Length: 65
Image (cartoon, rainbow, N blue to C red; front, side, top):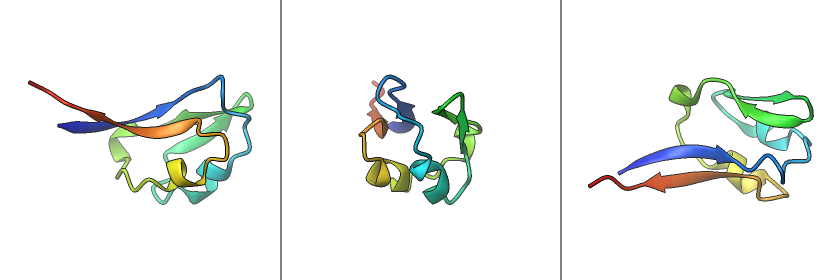
């Protein structure tokens, strides 16, 4: 089992709240949408997911067989 940070770009309005709350500073605003800069540094704390008013960013659980 693993985790991945996902962004639904169509839902992101570029408010930057998730960028401000990310403790590892892996998120950035580019062209009015959020991008993931260094996904390997993500600690999956969930602050971005919790703070996003548009539900555009989330942590996905990945299951491996």
